[in-house]
Image (cartoon, rainbow, N blue to C red; front, side, top):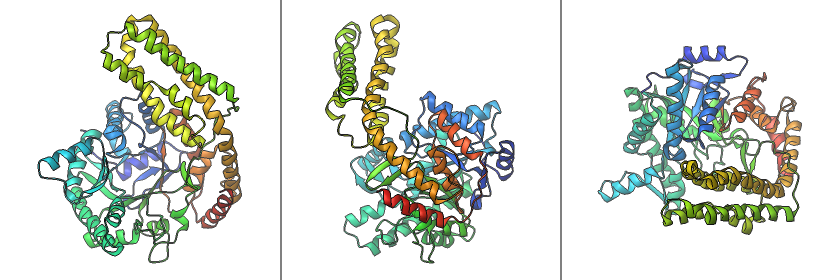
Length: 507
């Protein structure tokens, strides 16, 4: 186990050493945090690219890491633990310089199996929200204690700097669908949060966590939203638990297309969630800074590759070549491999991307939808095939050649299909960039679209750390370039209002 926790002095020294990167006081924790943090949503142990990116980020000045028990079914926490162990053991980084935040609440994957096992034994987790097939949610003290133990083990840490209830509003959606009145559901919701806070204070006393909080997608929602989480009510709940409470962090979505955190006046005192958080000295972490939802569609707020739109005939040809390469594996390579036939069939099915593209390449709807399918579904499936077959290539020349050729066919097919959608996406992003430039003269400064998206957030009063998915070294460098630009935090409500007006005209 890595002993210790982030300290005021050590994080301050880390910030000084990595100047001119911008740092901010993380609210009531008094820790110095880089204005962009490493978001662990899509990283996992065993992926070399992710390990290198996280290691490079910490070495270069990023000193806040955000992860969760359910990210990659625990694989995200495991990777963070491995990297921190390596860096602290080598002496490159001190544990006291790095702020680690994790979250709990979801039961998926391994946790669903645990839940089913407990149910079969007649001791299910209490206050369990059975939201849907393969998805449950819980913030009961017993579950918190179990999850914190597992997270600390995966992270190899003695103490977590921040521990957040992860989207507890799942209860509200479930309760209302189950027939509870909104008034009754909200009363029970905050009772559950109070019980969780009471337990988290005990975990602080034990030394297993330093501060706690809530990550909620509905902090910035309209107060009339049935799943709205009222930050002022949460604050009052913490104060009722203890006058010396350790409720110190909140996390919420906030980006160029979703400015509710700063513009939605939803607190009883007539403030936005961000303004209330600033008044109470809460550290504010924002998620999804580069992945925005607007008009029912997901947009990636980052510059796109310069790709020329391919002719339909060329797209069809690239997909046909990919299909031929997949057939080559099945007909020419597999017959000579000592692998059970049933397993060969499963590998064949997992590798059939060409057939999917053949039938659906016109139906992805948007570049981001295609990108999500490519990165989140197609590539992981094929990578699994590559990883399994690699050991057999040492004694099979045909397989060795296929492993060299097939990724090229795959990339060419993806590029061809993506080119059909990238042109429209580029037009939309160009108009968003124009709206950002017109909203605030400081946002207009040079930089990539992703840098401008981060700049708008970090320049706004009340903001602490923007959580960015930096799965590649190039993403780390893009973020660091922005953090080296001097940028004053101030009230930019007028800028956000102008931006919202400009964005609304786009959609």
